[in-house]
Length: 371
Image (cartoon, helix red, strand yellow):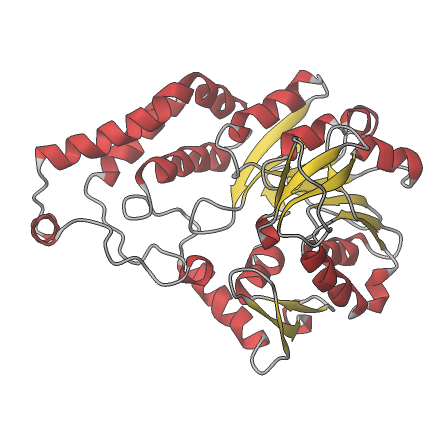
C-alpha cells in the first residue's frame, strides 16, 4: 500500500467523525468550547446525515495539507520498517491536517487513562516547586511502585510518557530499541533531569549518560532531581551547552521552559537567565566523544527542532559506533523525512521505526538501528 491510498482511507473515515473527548487538558488546559460541528450539523450527523459541503471541506483540507509533501511522505512511508510505523505516519499526518475533532490517535485508549490515574496517585501530598513555565507546579514523587527506584519533582503526565509508556523504547518484531545495561547514552534535551535519570537507571553501574541542558530555570530543577538520586547521579555528566552541528558557536535562545529553542542569529548579550535575547554556546556530539566518552551506544534527542542540526554534529559518532537512535520529529513536520533522509545518506544500514506517545501531535519519535 502507498501513503496516499492509506491517507485517503483515513480521511474518508474522518468525514463522519467528531471526537468531543479527544483533547488533552493535562497538557493544554481546559477544553476549547468553540470547536467542532455547529449544533444542527452535529444533530444531523448523529442520525447519519452529512452534507456534501462538509465532506468536501474535510477532504479538501486533508489533501491541501499533504499535497506539497506527497513525494517525501511516500518516501518515508516506504522506508519505515513495520506496519505500526506506517499506520502512525498516516494517522499523524491526518491529525495535523484535520485536528483532534476528526482524528483520534491510537494512543487515546483506555490504557492511557488508566496509566494517568496510576501516575496521579504517586504525587498525592508531595512537596511542590514552581517549574517556571505556564504556571505548572512540579510535585515530588517516588516511582518505586512502578518499577523505578527514582525520586523526582515532576508531573503525572510526564511519568506516563517517560516511565510507563517509555517514550524512548521501541518494541519491534526484531527486539526492542532501548537503552540497555552498560550503554553510553547521549541525552540531548535534559530539561528537568527526568530522561537522564531514566537512562542512568537502565544503563546500570557500568553505563554513562551525557545530558545537555542550558536554561537556568531548567538546570535548577535538573540538579535538584539528580541530587535526590545519589545512587544514579555519578552516572550522569551534565553539559551546559546547546547541541549543534559545530562546537563553540553562539546561538540565540528563545526561552519557553521545556520548549526552549535555539537558532543562529545575532543578539545583544544579556544575562544568562534573561527570558529572551540571550545566547548560548554550542557543543557537538562528536566533540563530546573525543573529550569525554569512549563510545556512544544510544542517542536520544528532544531539542525543539534542532535535531537535524545536532545529528550533523554526530556524523563521526554515527559512522564509528552506529548507535541506537531515538530522535523526536514532531517539532517540524518536515523532520518526519529530512531526519531519516540525512541518516540514510550516511549509508550505514539503519532501519527506521516511528512511535508516538500522546493523544495529540507532540512526542513523536523516530527510532533507528542498524540491523
